[in-house]
Image 1 (cartoon, rainbow, N blue to C red):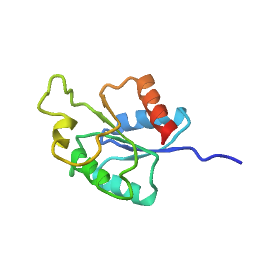
Image 2 (spheres, one colour; image 1 turned 90 degrees about the vertical axis):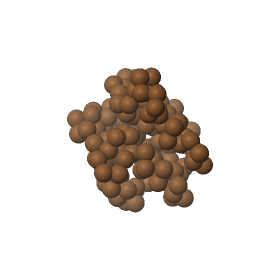
Image 3 (spheres, one colour; image 1 turned 180 degrees about the vertical axis):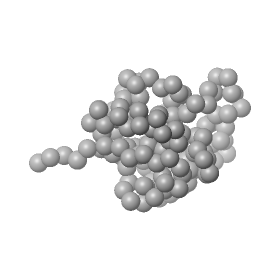
Length: 134
């Protein structure tokens, strides 16, 4: 009996970086779908619930922050592990942090927060760890 590969929804508007992430996770045995906007991400979530989501915070239209809140607020999707991968450096931009946008909001924090440029091996170790318990 063949087991189904775990799926990852990559929410990223930088086409080249999204393709790189897709290549990395597929080479590691996962299946992946790319969504470049929040609207595309919602359509992908409705079509098939992924096992894990990678999410950029800066997206065209509805921001990744709003999308994060929408996913965490949904009974259908709030159990999906989310790895935020963003170019926002919280060391130099202390006013910009996922902790700040979650302040006062009763939702679970992301399972991981990675800053671009992300190291390939660290990303895969993070995904492997999260999906081993998912």
